[in-house]
Length: 200
Image (cartoon, rainbow, N blue to C red):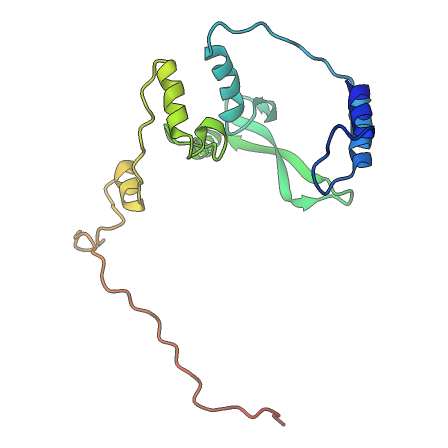
């Protein structure tokens, strides 16, 4: 296949993208050809559930990979991390191992879990905003209902869902709910004196 691609490029029958050179593609083809490839052709699925499950693992991974968890002794969790703000002299990022109590680790983990039905993949395939009809068609073939629109939630609704006795919109003294009032813009006064251009 690589010989065929190089032949077609050399004879001009295989067009490269506009603004790119043929010799660059030839060098890239030779470089890729030096790698060892293992092509595995699987049997055709009788249904799409296996393919959907396989792709779902790539689209919806967990907040932390299991390989990063180094140790758990029943009380503390040790996991590897990378400090993106610090780099070594060689240009590589600095990494280390952090220890947290089990409760703190679970709390941090839950902070990265998306809410149910929240789309975390944007502008890609069936989950793009413009492919809603195609997604509903696929869901119908799988025996699922159409995608339900999630109502937008403001911070007041979020606080009500979290519960608690102290609502942020309630006055801490009288307990009456706060209301929106007029928006007051800051007044910016100008300097009354004009300073000399060439100050001594």
